[in-house]
Image (cartoon, rainbow, N blue to C red):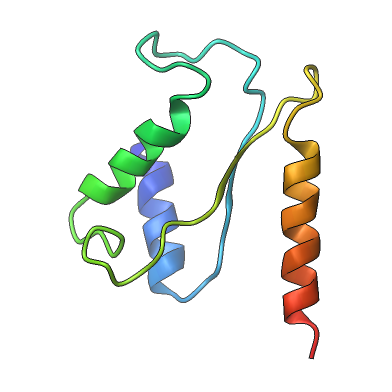
Length: 92
């Protein structure tokens, strides 16, 4: 997760708008301490606690996060709605 959080911080510092999509959420997490629904809280905490966190300092908003699973057919509609909303806002 460390490389993920640093990559997200790097993109954010570069001014890139991004969203985080957790895929295959039907699979058991590698860490038994993390539940399917708890991954967002764990990832949010990691982003907030990292050195120089622009989110903890209030410089940036946390990226939107989505849980998806193709086998359980969950998360698709919310993600597609988010993409459609981004496209609408990007049109001149």
